[in-house]
Image (cartoon, rainbow, N blue to C red; front, side, top):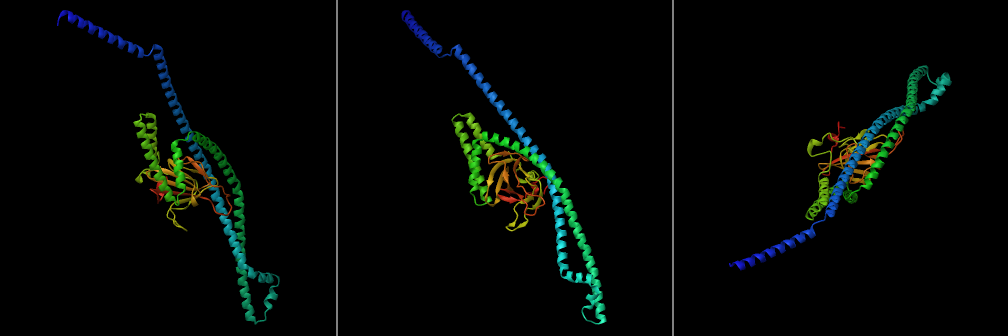
Length: 420
């Protein structure tokens, strides 16, 4: 290449390079943020980080407060159960005394009925003994025999009279003992009522918090419970609840995949958490025998019917407990409330998903303090039993407990702490 042409080529190349550099520099200078914009972006980022930290701190504080309130409710329920135990003991003593009085009064009535035909003869003999013996014409031997019979009858009447007086004394003593126990029972009931009122305040506060923080998962659980309420049998209701749970788990899985595909990390994480909660609820029981001894007796009281006992409808599929008046019912397991509403002949019915395919079924309650979708801890109050008057005759309300695995009733005895 000639020098002149080479110089021209280099000049053109240099010019083009300079123009390119100038153009690039101009674009970069135009696109580059100004110092003010940089400072604004930094402030925004710092504000976002601070907001996230504040939100996390608020969530942590709210979680800690909720756990503290939960512990307070469980502790209040335990304190109330102590009062209910004292009431149950007083009621049991009153029942024993009432039964003793009833037996004495029954014996009195039976003796009076047996002696009633003899009363005219007894009265006549007491007023006119000689005339009575001579009233019927007979020989001396017959009259002697009659006298011996009357003497035997007199001795028998004396024994009966003594027994009658003892029955009267027993009935009176039982009535006096009942009168003496009544103030103690009233005092126990007053303590129970005061502690119940304190617990009700905690429950009302928790319900207010939950109503403000109701989530889509809670709504879905309530919709599933509404569908289960239309079932004809308890087993069909449990089958419907399980089907709804699996459907919700599948929807949550699909929501997570869709959110991840759209790069919505927060939505994806929320969906994953929802999926995990539906698939593995925080529960007490697991598969096999590892859950034995992990259920808490849901109410203070005595068992009046066990699993397998004969009933009008066949062998019992659960256990029944007579409880003191207005006794508090607690969750027998940790888990999630699957159903909380009236259902067929069960009345107020509560179904808890205890995990591992197990459900605890409670019925006979007067009031429910939990709702579908709510997570509960073992020992947390979930309802109350009806009120009734100790010492009065009539049918006593009972709490019915049923434990089902995959919809099939199983004996709850091995699962209860300390057995039945």
